[in-house]
Length: 332
Image 1 (cartoon, helix red, strand yellow):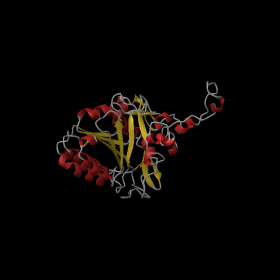
Image 2: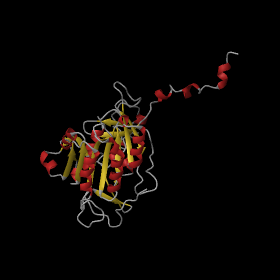
Image 3: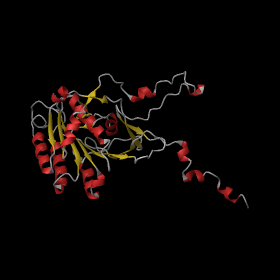
Image 4: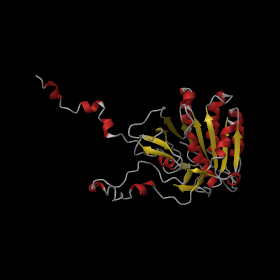
C-alpha cells in the first residue's frame, strides 16, 4: 500500500472532501462512489473493463468529466482516437442543483393506499435495489459550448503511441498547481485515458512502462484517473499487470443480443467488482453484496443488486433433492 501524501496540510480544493485527514473526490457516478466506500481517494486510478464492447463505459466517462467540469477541475482527455475527445466534450452532463439525498428515501416512501393490492401489503415499503445516492447528473442534459470553453482542459487526441501520451501527461503532472509538494494554489487534475491496451496504440511494448510511470507520478499529485480497456483484446499477462497497477477495477459484461438476465429484464448486463482500492487503508471497502447488474437509461446509469426470482431457483438441482430420500423406494 502506498499511502496518500495529502496529509494534515491537504489543500482545500472545490469538489473534494477530507476523510480521515485524506483528500477524496467523487467519480461523478454515485454507484461507483458507493462501491469505493463513499468517494475516490486522491491519486486513485480506476479502470473500467468492457469486454468486446464500448457501449456503456462512455456513460461513466461522462460522469467523471461532468464532476470535474462542475468544480472547474482541470480535465485531461487522452485517446488514440480523435473522435473520442470531441464526442466526450460535447456530451458533458450538467450537475443538478436539487436532488434527493438518498435513493433509500424513495424506497421508504409508503405505497399508495389506492393501489389494488391486498390490504396487508398496502403499507409495505417499496424496494429499490439501486446502490448509491441519488445521481446528481442528468445524462440527458449537457453543458453548453460556453460552459465547456470555461472548463480548464487538455486534450491529447489521436496520440498514436504511449510515449506521446505520456509526454503530454508528464507535463501536466509536473505543473505546480497539481503537485502536492509545492505551495501554490491547488486544483484537481482529472485524467481520462480511453482504450488502454487497444491495437490503435503504435508501441504496445511500452504498455507496462506507461502504466507504471502513470501510477508513480500520480501518487505525487492532486489527481485522479479513469482508464477504460477491453480485456478481450489483451493477453492474460497484460490484464493481470493492469489490475495489479491500478487501484480499482470494474467490469461491464454486456448481454448478448436477445439475452436477458433472469429477474432483471431491463438490465443491460452484469456488473463485476474485480478490485477495490486500499490507498488510505489496509483493507478494502466491505460490500454487502457482490452480484450486480447495470442499466443505462436516457438520464442515468444505474447499478443495482441482482435478484433471482423464486421460479428461477426451482429449476436448480437443489430443488430435486428437496424430496425425502426414502421416496425413491416407495414402489418397493
